[in-house]
Image (tube, rainbow, N blue to C red; front, side, top):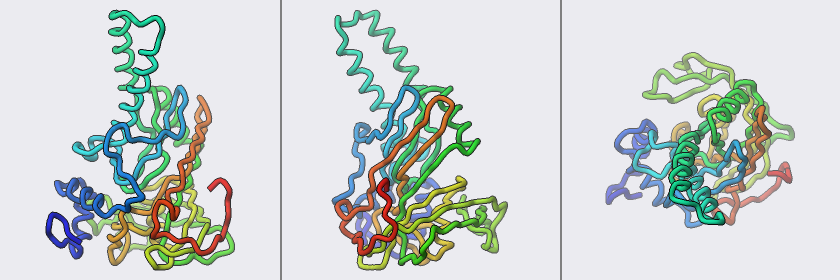
Length: 311
């Protein structure tokens, strides 16, 4: 594979880690990944290119695209999700205001602009997703809503389900319960995590996941499985590490696969469903399944293992 005329296949591991730690190579790596993307996938080219899957007077849930950073701090020169949400909200509110009858006066417009600016400023994300992970991501529309969502996370009143394509065929008649603590890998630069069986694992904390096998198939001609994962705790890179612990790493995971799995155009991890029981309302959002042959022809299902209508 060529990047700016140079073959970088052998150096992908180094480049990927530089990208992950926010080095100057970040934009170069993202551009390289874009070049590898399937024509069936889309990368947001503007702030307007965003999918809203849930909206209320208190919260907005979007279907985040993979390889899109959460905010400008992660990548100042890239389109980011927070910017997309704020631009979408500003455009929608402006259109509603201008449709009013009779037309607003100059004084009313000036006053409305100040109110709108404050509403936009108040929008903030309630949780994070990895750069390569797509799917449901919640934003609060006020400080109070943000606090109540945070409280719901602390009180474990949140249900998060993820879809993933993993290497190999998982064979099990029952759901898999993974109870393996996760800590930081002291032998790696930056915040690379590891399970507690790693010799350099420091400060491991409880991490629990439920894994259901949905489908068997092939990805790019190799055995693969589609799994549904519910995380009971929210540790950094939890699903990626737990699937790797089971011997079935996520396809496209350039951090936790050996050798580095750099060929896929993305990490095959998608936040399918998000439910948050806040004191204000029940947030229940569902993002479309991106791991279908119509979106990525490299994935071919051969057998349904556990059919669930919602998924």
